[in-house]
Amino acid sequence: MLCAAIASRTIFSLIHLDAGVQWISWLPGPGIWSDYSDIYMPQLKYLASGFMLYRDIDTQYPPLFLYSMLPLYNLAGEKAAWIPIVLADALTAPVIYLVVRKFSTEKIALIAGLGYALSPVALVNEGYLWLSSQPMTFLLLLSILLLRRDRPVLSAGTLAIAALFNQEVLFVLPVYLAFTAAKFRPSLPKAGGLFALTFFGVLSPFLVQAPKAVLHHLPFWEPINIGPSEPSRLPTPAASAVVNFGQSCTNTLVPNIYTGTACGNIVNFQAYAWYMQVARIDAMAAFLAPFLFVLFAVGLVAIRRSPNVFELTCAYSFIGGLLIFSALVHPVLAYYFVPVYALILASMTNGRSVLIGLAAVTLGLLAGEGPFQFIIPTICIFAFTLIQDSSPRALAT
Image (cartoon, rainbow, N blue to C red):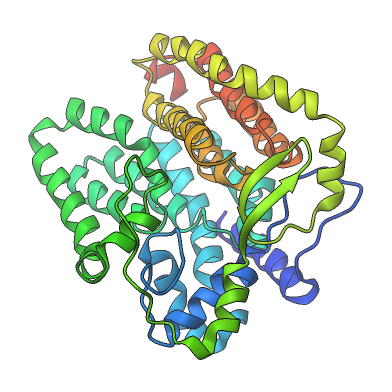
């Protein structure tokens, strides 16, 4: 399984290195974003030159995402900095196997792990494009595995590290807290303390030197105006480089699809042109998604005693976070759903759920950008609840 994950991602990464970022013109799919070269690399260049995140470097990610790539960037530049992203994505497959093995059979767990190892959503977004959902997704699944193994304090520390790579992982925090409080109440103060100590301990150097810059960059939404950020240390002679770097985030208009701020360049214009013809479907999906999300919560309540309810509810909570994000910040992009599909695969219990889960991760790639991305995983989770057998004994047979 791990070999399959590494081999498949190695092939996709070699294609990226050889041919760059492009897409098959006749195949519908997601936005093929060039964030790695257009955003991450300029940021790493400044970071390697001694500039500070947030105050000097315009990034929306927590510090560990760029710092995890910095050693390999210093060693071999752009041709090696992607390795932590791809390696974390490959390691997610065996973690999913171990999670599923806690409540299902060896066969189902193996299929779930292989499902992620060969998942089109993961292979394109993380193995080929090298986007920012990893290593956060790997650490999220690892924290769930540790919680399943009755290690709540270590699990909380792992979740905090995940949040220091990508703050989207906090979308599962309500479910995570509820599950920990219900099953490990005596350990909750220690777990919460380690989470806070880890998260704010890593952020503390930035909060001390440039608190306003951190608060401007890391929160998805600012309910109040905290005033201008601390002045940057970037020198004036480097203004041309700063302008190029700043242009990676611009006001973007794609008719009937998206209007607002976008970071990075997109080269899959054929896919966007195709989706312009189905704007009505996207409009309908945008209207239906919140209603389906609320309606299908009934299914999770019905299977609240099932052994995989924690993983399913985490996936559901992540979708809810993305819905709020899309309402307050900007429309959600397809690659934001990589952790959602990983959680869905980690929720498999039987053959029918395998078929539904594998279909979802395939459709998730072909569906492309737009609000329809919410419909696929939401329906998938509801389908899981309909076929769910809440008996642990039945799942083990």
